[in-house]
Length: 395
Ligand SMILES: Cc1ncc(COP(=O)(O)O)c(C=O)c1O
Image (cartoon, rainbow, N blue to C red; front, side, top):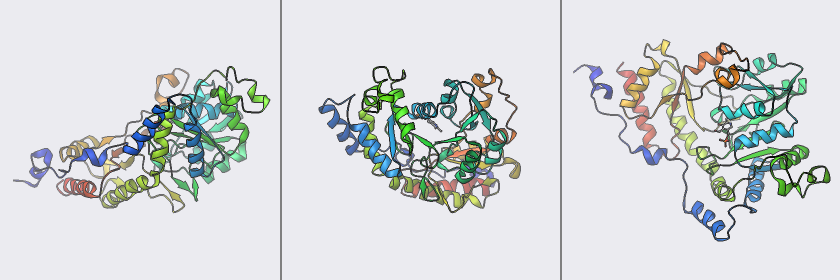
């Protein structure tokens, strides 16, 4: 028998035998979540309720920010943020292309032009130098996305933004609990937005939050989509209480109830992911082809996803072959999932050049997504390490 035949892809035994369903299950709901939801149902509070406001208070306190507005989802939270900043036709908003579509679309639906910028090929986050180059007299805001839970280089971004009078709207939908120089993500820019969709580190099923230290932005966002609450604001806003600005962004209380329960264990659950992922990444660090980004010590990241750069030209094993071999060993791995936004018809039909952003286009081909092990006691991650070592030692 040759060495190659020992690989599972060649009929050998699988390295990963552990039942992954439980170790990778997300969200992790308990009886406490059920009780919180049922209690609201018994009170008949399935629409109008204080529950989203309680979540605002608790999440705002957790982040250390003055104003928090619960929203129907993260997309609506970003729409509200840009509306509050007065962004509309004739304005430009800078955003990375390598992100979920909801980072860019609210600016577009408000009538602004989305100007896509490059990411840093190591961190995969917005490149502050490239952001700077794309500023024009029409630029009104930049949207740094803390991709996969890794904080962007906020000092550089806010520095450039200040210099040019541009608002910073942090898309922290992947970064609940992550920190930059001791500050929670979402609280550093002018406005921060979060998603509580079921896959997120703080899952509620659906839901979102807009946070800010600026009272005027908060009031404007309330007036946009929370007509009942606008009634309690100063006249400048309350006169719109019978119409809002045409939107209804109120978060469902049942989802807010789940978010409140989940918030209690957010840090603990982030730590389980961090500990497990760190173990795996340490093991991969020495294997050729893997480029593991180590953030500076002032950044405390979380893992919404665990995506790393794999360079096939350094090993001679293509990404697709590697994925096939690892899958045969039982690993759940895939190539990254976000299509680049500047190449999508919505934007190319408006003149976006799909050949732009060479750094982003190149790096995206090399992103390998690995699990975050949210419910693993360390057993599964050990088997993943064995699987990687086996595949690479037998190549
Ligand atoms: C980076 C990013 N921004 C915004 C959103 C929008 O959040 P939601 O799905 O709650 O509307 C998401 C959701 O996945 C996201 O990943």
